[in-house]
Length: 234
Image 1 (cartoon, rainbow, N blue to C red):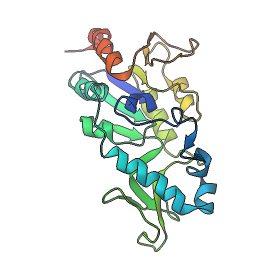
Image 2: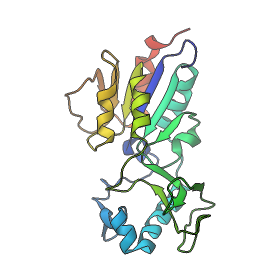
Image 3: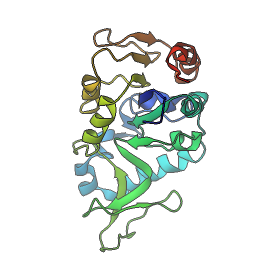
Image 4: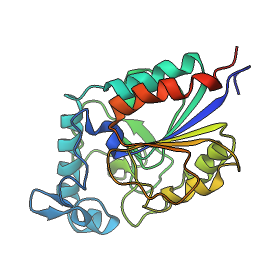
């Protein structure tokens, strides 16, 4: 931890990027064009129709180029002046990075990266937005999106648990934390740790929540700045 700074751990989800114009699966009604998300975001989909899967992620990647970090992203980056901020995000976009946050862990992968379909340790930045059939890794296998699909293990969970365990303050923003294994992270916060939630939607009242702010990311972060002033050390 940075000297004299409280460790602020942020769990961010789809609502964090919604104000930047990135649509969530929920907003799409679980559909993309006429396809159920399981037909474009699962290992079975990849086996059945890899070209469709690539097209789905190419379109999302292309759309991301036109999106910008919103004031909520920027406010989190600014908080690094006063806090040791660690972001654990369920989002696959790079808006936290572009906003200037420096410690970001992506639970579900990264849209702008690709990896070998046979050796998941071979991960590369994609040059541009388009990944095509025939684009191969150095071992000769097809490159696939560097995304954790429905039905796949989430290899970053143990690391995320270690981050949450060390939190002095926990902020949950833009996620209902009802999808496992990400939802389990709340159970690893130390007893007595202040927990804040920013979400305009209904949030389950049960759990170690100290404050629930029923606003979107941008407006919610404005309120958070005031609430966190008492935690700033000098």
